[in-house]
Image 1: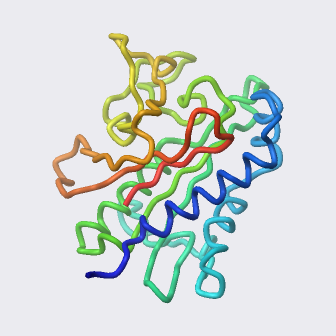
Image 2: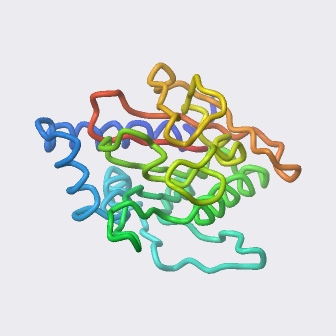
Image 3: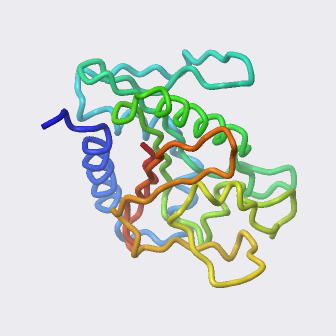
Length: 224
């Protein structure tokens, strides 16, 4: 029997974090939770929580990132020395936009770099030792409020299928599909799904698991 893969550890860690936030914010409504998520949490809060169960084996590499040609990612946020695990983390939230509303989100390019890093690592025979984790508070009506999944700009753009391929747990019953139409399919929670990028470069096996339930205060998407 081989060594446990990185997803076995991270699923447990994610569930601990969800339990923590359910206890802390169990009685909060979405509006109050959204304010907390945007103003009082950042990526490092989630990275530290994911690394905590690994104790002294966790090395926090945030801020040490370097780039090579074509902006390919060569670093990660968390390194577990005992297992040679590399973990990249993104936390979804909104910032104040140019219109003075809390609607701005990270550029899609930063997520694409992380997905490319993960797939490059897996293609280099590092499956089981690398993971990309996305976390967010369950405080919005549509997942697309936190991440740019549309074609072009505008409040309600059409879905960009190249981006949607990375989120197999999102469903819709409307055609054409606008970003606001995408909903989380909670029936797929805790089930291994596969990501099939619309790209001629990547054709390996890339896995995804959505972690969370509809009433949970926090959700994760785990890629490995």
